[in-house]
Image (cartoon, rainbow, N blue to C red; front, side, top):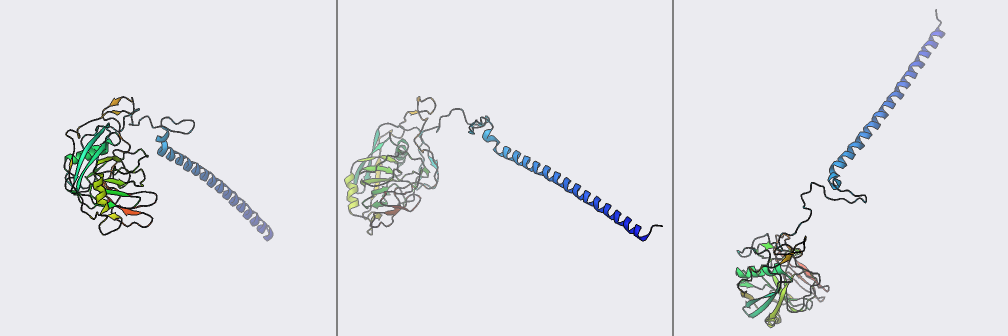
Length: 342
């Protein structure tokens, strides 16, 4: 029979074998887990690459170049060449019209020459020479509104008398500075606009928000080239200067004119609203009626239009806060900037 010593040694060897097997199993398990982890990581990375490719695939689906630039996919609905915009002018509905009026229907208006409009105020008459070549869409809108008697019996609601801003603003039948025709249209700007004495310009509340409001510059004014020049006053500027001489109601330099100013009528030549022009296409360059447009034409707006703003105070620096068709407050300072709504 084995002695106690032999039994103890046998038990010890058995325990050692068990410990070795357990260690081997643990090593094998760790190896398996490592393999599984590596495989899982590969699958995650592969899945991520697939997802990225799926989301971004259209960016390079057709025509990725060696320099990394991309082109539209072959299935794109955009034509190889296009003529845009389809018409020179676009008048986008937005807001409630101050008077019942329709947007212009002539979207390819005359774009050469000038047309005269006679504006009769309660204090005298003015002649506006509207510049079709510079702002065909703005001129067409003015003529269309005049033909619908939109401007008849409407106030000129704002006068400014600061040294850097001398304007009389009109064109809002409500007289609040926030009224418009229920549509808007884009800016027609060159970036070189000057607002010298006699200039007639569209009021706005930001880029491409022109409506019905306009302003008459009765003295050289320092403004950024942000307002479409509609034309100029060729007769009757002295009438506006006489209004300005009487100042702003309640004092100050920006607000309602001290003397009530009302547009009684606006008279335009017969057939001027229907006159059409020639426009070059963006493809062939051939002259075609209604194929290309003025910069910014067609931008949507729901606020309407005005000119340099509504009444506010101006200080010694010559700044003036104002609002227009959208009742946006603005400030004019030494830089000559003016915000308006319309």
